[in-house]
Amino acid sequence: MRQPNGWKNAAILFALCAMMTIAASAQTFTTLASFDITDGSSPYFAPLVQGTDGNFYGTTQFGGTANLGTVFKITPAGDITTLYSFCTQAGCLDGVYPYAGLVQGVDGDFYGTTSQGGINNGHGGTVFKITSKGKLTTLYSFCAQTNCTDGIYPSGGLVQGADGSFYGTTFYGGVQDAQWCSGGCGTIFKITRTGIFTTLYSFTGYSGEGSAPNSALVQGKNLHFYGTTENGGAYGACTYACGTVFEITPNGTLTTLHSFAGSPSDGAEPFANVVFGTDGSLYGTTSIGGANNAGTVFKITPGGVLTTLYSFCVLSKCADGQMPEGGLVRTSDGDFYGTTTIGGVYTVGSLFKITPGGTLTTLYSFCAQGYPRCPDGSFVYAGLLQATNGNLYGVTGGGGDLNGGTVFRLSAGFRPFVETRPTAAKVGKPVIILGSKLRGSTSVTFNGTKAAFTVVSNSEIKTTVPQGATTGKVKVQMSRGTVKSNVVFRIIP
Image (cartoon, rainbow, N blue to C red; front, side, top):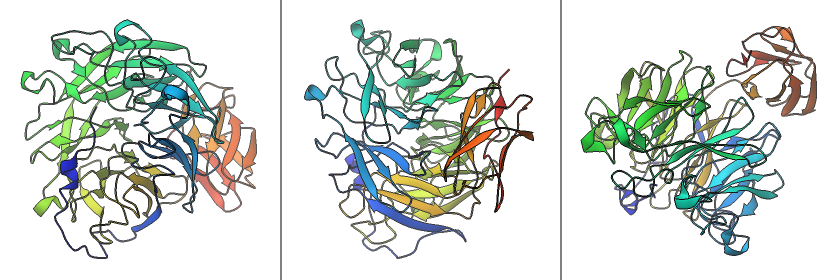
């Protein structure tokens, strides 16, 4: 499991930073908050999630009471509240070092993982549930089985499947093999909201298989899950470096879709998750490899045909960015936005936009507000969140007032939309609609079919999938006009 390296901090080469940076028109960057250790520090790999109350929630790897990580809430105005400090329980039975972000379940609670801690020798990690008020419940402690065949170090996030269960990965553990992975090559697991745990797959490294899955999964229209492994693959010279993209069914049948070669025309080490584009293909990043060994953006069809869309470090001194370890987010216009860990004008990370065709625009270079403090943040490991107000939000691993990282907003001119949770369900199943300024809504439709609904707050509507609904956009009629869902809502037969 990769730790942030000191050499990245040494990459700061510029003694002076201009007050402005590369930015497209209509792009406005705002630093919302800086972490001060007590409220968390270093939210390295954990993107934010928007709650149904309109606030944002996330984790920090360090900081808090024991300096072993926190769960926090931040308002759109930038007010941070620490909801939980890990290692509150004796022996850190509640877990430590939450690498991944949170996911809000349809029950309103948040679910996540810690990479270490728990009741089994303290190093296996945990799956936890936490309320918006900060009450934490540990659902599962890893390494509960002999030789940790259930997995250890769950450094990737969770995703809630259409069946209501959560699915995730562990970086190590699983079936062990001395030739490939003496500590296990990692696993894919399923866990219910009540903590019933099932190992779906153990990576072995055999037959060109991947190892060390380090990111969250994404569920497709066929209800299969898609993900990446940081290591392994079909290329012998890259056994511990190149990585794969894979598909797995809900019952545990895995198919390797692509093995990265690390060549100039291919990437290597896909650290982050993949996302679906409007064309049904998957889009993602590799942290290294490509034409300049500085990382890539790629597209891959569900059938496994991969196209490298962009290789970073095209511009002088990698002003376009380098090492994109965070995943992409597909915005409501169908394009993708992402981050680079280093590179950019000031060498400490950047924000970019890329079209499905591969046209990349650098939107912001961090440390634009002055070296060495970088009050706007530095070293961006995590991906972005597009909130229902249209703005993009993210975190930096360093910089800020006390070098503990920041939370920022990028306003890119997007209109508000609504988000459904889940994005697919059967007729009669409950659905939460997340948005802004929802009070006074007069109609909710699923691809034109009206649904009964209840406005819970300005940011939440509760409804059910109506009889006769078909796959399509969900629309909410309000006094100020109609807003529609950012993705198509799928009706499950």
